[in-house]
Length: 92
Image 1 (cartoon, rainbow, N blue to C red):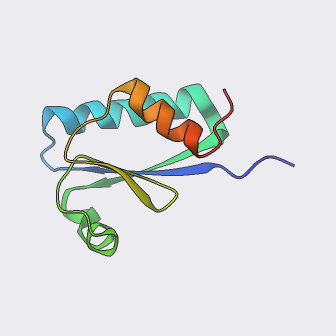
Image 2 (cartoon, one colour):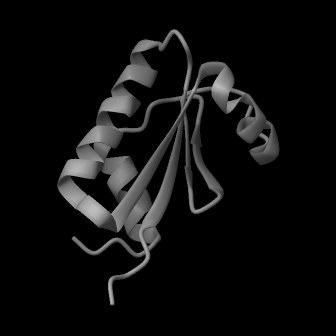
């Protein structure tokens, strides 16, 4: 039985700033690198407004992992994002 994927929600502005574009690229890389270990959900612009309000987010880019706000207002480095995923049980 496969382990449940780690849910990553990425909030990106529309039009995207450079940090938002970078975060979107990192999410695409996660899908390629980790396959079914991670499920990345992109919330772009106004489409993510309701979910942002639910989570109390005020700015983008932002990363929420398993319903916990991990990063807000800055694009994380790849190392920071991977470290956060490891905190949630990612096995590389």
